[in-house]
Amino acid sequence: MGQADQPIFPLLKGESTDFDIPDFAKHPQAWSVGHLGVEIGAPLRTGYSVVDEFNKLIMDVFNLVSGNMLQMGNVLTWNVWFTEPELVNTEEWRTHAQRWRESIDVDHCSPDGDGTKAKYFDGTPFKPNFDLTKALEKEKIGRFLDNLEGEIKEGISECLNDL
Image (cartoon, rainbow, N blue to C red; front, side):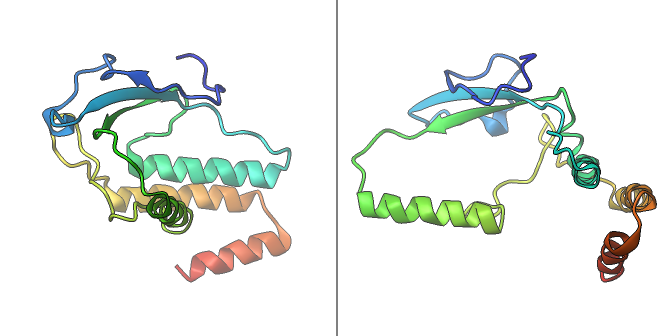
């Protein structure tokens, strides 16, 4: 770690040894397992202050409801569980890959459903305080709008009024 700007994330053999793996996240029936870790870096600057501030706002709001998952310096680690290799039907794979790409591009979810809910190590569901989150989001958006003027501010304010 310590390389947040590294664009390549190597998949290493075996389970991660960086932390104990909770029972609900183990898959002993898997054929094999690998792991990868990604350190979260600072958002890339575009050179356009409104865009850079907006990107920061989006990350701040996301972190409010995700337990600071994408906070700069955090390391996200995945164990990736594999089934046994098998011959591939190339047409099925082509359409499968297309469905995944479209579902991620459009709905930001798996074609198989919503996946699992975020949990703490002990299995307790992660439940953000939405009332507090809404208040903090409103405060952050207000500060963002304070730095804008003209049509951009009016357009964003109008969109927010519709929410």
